[in-house]
Structures are given as C-alpha cells and as structure tokens.
Image (cartoon, protein in one colour):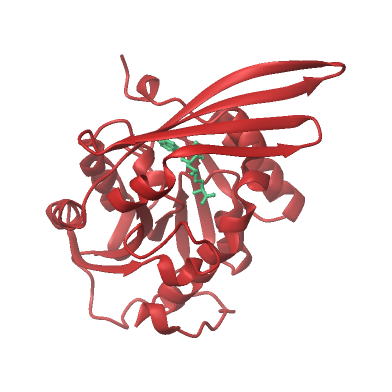
Length: 279
Ligand SMILES: C[S@@+](CC[C@H](N)C(=O)[O-])C[C@H]1O[C@@H](n2cnc3c(N)ncnc32)[C@H](O)[C@@H]1O
C-alpha cells in the first residue's frame, strides 16, 4: 500500500470546512501575525502545507509573497484554486502528501496550521514531514506550525459535537487513546439532496507527540533553532483550548548566512507589532 493510500483525505469536511471551523480562524491569524513578525521582512516566497481551502496561503499572497499551497485532498485543492481565482491572487497549488512533497524551488517559509501535522497516520511520519520541509526550505528558512498536545486530545477530542445549517447536519463523535497517543473523530453527515436526506460517514485521525520528541526530530532533520509558544493566550474566547493543549512552533533551518544578509525584494511589507505571547 502506498503512503498516500493510508491517509483518508477530507471529503465532506472539505466542503464545509470554512463554516465549521470559522471561530478558530481569527486566533490562528493573530498568532501567525504576531509570532512571525520578526521574520516576515525576509520572506519573499512561502508554502502553506496542508493548506485546506487556501485561506492562509491567500493571506500571505496578499502581502506580495510568492505562494505555494500543498494539500493531499483533491477537493481541498480545488476549493483553494477557486478561492485564489475569485481573489485574483496567484497561488501555485500542488496536490501532494506532506511527508513527501517537493517544491519547484526552495522557499523562505513553510507554514502548516491548525494541527494539520497531527493528521499523519503514523508516529514515524513526523520525521518524514520534517525532512520534506527541510528539503523545501532555503538555508535559514523557517517552519511554522501548531500541534495538538496530549492535554488537548484529552480536553477536546472527547464527546460529541453537533453542527447544523440549512440542508446539512453533522455530529462529530470524538475519542482519544492516551496509550496509543491517538485521537479520532467519527463524523456522521446528514445532507439534503432535494427532498431526501442522505447519511455519510467520514473519519479523521490524529497522532500526538510531546515537545521533546518534536524538538529532537527537528534538530535531527537540520533545524538549528526551535521556539515554542503555548496557544492558549490566542484562544482566550475558546474555553476548550487551555494552557498546554496546543503549541505553536517556529523552527529555523540551519546553514543560514549572517542575519540581515537575506534581503527581501518585496516592495511593500506589512508592519506587524509583536505582542506579549511571542515574547
Ligand atoms: C485541520 S485541516 C487544516 C487546514 C489548513 N491548514 C487550515 O489552517 O485551515 C488539515 C488539512 O490537512 C490535510 N492533510 C491531511 N493529511 C495530509 C497529508 N498527509 N499531506 C497533505 N495534506 C494533508 C487535509 O486534507 C486538510 O486540508
């Protein structure tokens, strides 16, 4: 069985993704703005890995950054392409696996947001993703991502969540296993087709790593600086995401020239003011 065959790409979740997870968007955007503020002036090209519907890739493209966007789900890629075309922004979209993707040229920044990194099928896949990311970055380039931690699995990968809008209803039945360091969501969809409702099933699984494992893997795959921030201060309005549940990481690929030697060629840059959680 090939690697890609062991991953079930989003199907119905892709279709309704932006609406279901709308409340997570602004904390994630704020975190990216603040935590990347110090490096953005040297970012001319970037890739959003596991890009979903392309929201983050388009935010970065709007800043004048040459953007690649990678996702394994054909439907996510199609939705991202549509959004880019509606926005009139250039986005190079590649349907590929985050464990093995390749870009046509090395980029300055790779983002992988909203616990997309937890979505790989095996514990050993963390190293594969880190290697593929290191290969796709220029020396001194950065990898920004967030993960769900074991405490997050315990807090919010549990119980049932209901969501509905006209013509669509879904229940997510969530579970986790501490021993296996895994979480899952069995999603039951009820979708109206004309006068009939049809039921569909979709399953999403996540793998969990601890902070030491993440740091060690990054060091072993060529990253020489790793910073981490707890996500809770960004999610103050979400009582589920408490301290320790979710972490943002920023890792720098080694072998960079002296700081300041990499000059951005972008004419216009957005100025961003670092906030307290990044300190
Ligand atoms: C929780 S969504 C995050 C989407 C996006 N990063 C965001 O912030 O909205 C996870 C995404 O990871 C993608 N994905 C899952 N496994 C993948 C893999 N092995 N390679 C690439 N993308 C993958 C899914 O298709 C989905 O779009």
